[in-house]
Image (cartoon, rainbow, N blue to C red; front, side):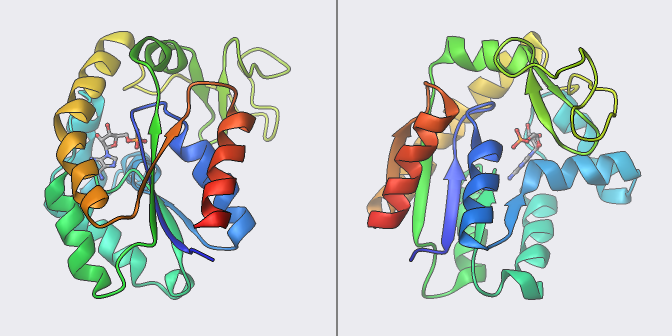
Amino acid sequence: MKSRLLILGPPAGGKGTHAERLAAELGVPHIATGDMLRKEVSEGSDLGVQAKAAMDAGELVSDELVGAMLVERLEREDASEGWIIDGFPRDLKQAQVLDAELGNRGVDLVIALEVERADIIERTVGRRVCPRGHVYHLTHNPPETPGVCDIDGEALVQRDDDTEEVIVHRIEVYHDESGALLDFYDSKGVLRKVDASGPPDDTYARIHAMVNSS
Ligand code: AMP
């Protein structure tokens, strides 16, 4: 069974949702650089202070900061048997940082989610999150009580980078960087593209079949 997996894809492509589900099923940690950075920002750490402006503007945080943060996370005990990384690498330079850290075995499988631009915008602008990371959508997955997390009762908010203006820029950043990144993993024979435009359960079934058959 493959246990060193990357999930790549555009903003609001479903990376977090599918990575979390698959990680629970495989019994490996779900490592999401976006979540790690948001936690640093909310705690007001040095890293969070340095990352916040780039994140709010839909830009990438510097490779040095995110690379060091990820390498440190991969060296923790719970990551020794495998992991699913969501949101890293974002560009070729980060892929090289990861390769250098992993050595000969590298990654087992890279799942690239594919979603149309109009769907990304609609998913993002309607997304609401609670401070503990539970994710909703105003029309596709609304909470039982508007504005309140079903699980922990926290007030739901819109991420600062989920506005229409910022998402348009995040999509551009993804398209600028992802071509070379996908080619890099394709040339290693580990890339699998997945249509992620439909209902989440359908997409997950495709991912699941892919992980089990490869
Ligand atoms: P995400 O939650 O993956 O959509 O990431 C949200 C934001 O966090 C991105 O728009 C970037 O500003 C930042 N970020 C997350 N992962 C990375 C990364 N690997 N490299 C640089 N910036 C990142």
